Length: 279
Image (cartoon, rainbow, N blue to C red; front, side):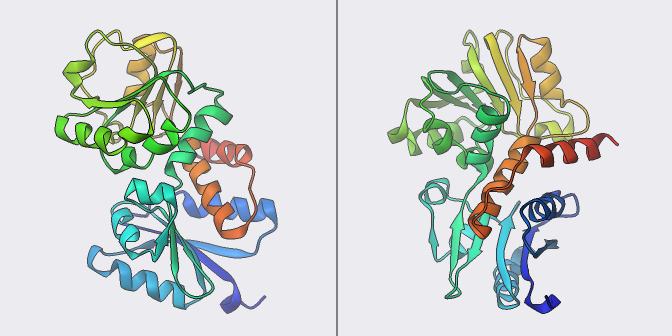
């Protein structure tokens, strides 16, 4: 197949050099027998839309979108999935045959699948805490609530953001928001760190006694070694502790399925990426 007719995909972000997406999607393509190319593209904040449209005009079929462009991608999309509509952010763009852009958000389904399918964590009927109230949280609330937890609490340093998020999704389930000081004396079955604090070796101000018996702690960040949040959780009563590498691969798999109509196997890819982190 001539190179200029190969279906092109990419991830747009800034910064982007750290992205694992090209490796992940290349592995998916090899596994499923798909012919495509996938690259990581550095975009400038004031040039994002022009870059996206230029990419689409040169056989671009789909894009993953990462920080800081997920809100811009939401605005650029001509129409969106229900989950992207609620999230107010798009991490996946698909170029349709008429040239219009369809926007989706696969972050939440990636998180839920990693927890439920890969780690066999039950979310239904559980008390769940999400730490943080940024864009990463907005993208995962609806998929988590669709699992019918008994309670979802959003805790954030800026209390108003947590309260607003809880209000925005209150029609979907039992969700509330507050500050870290309001966690004192409360315990949860699943605690998800959705802040980027781990990237800086920092820990949110969390109280002791946060974990119920058999509780799970999950950090959306990942690294070669357990994050500071994962280490803290292990030392403070969490029975199981996981990082977000599986979420990264699972959200990518959902994007790949949307683009190519085939569901890749994620476990072999998670293993390859995990081994590359430690080698």
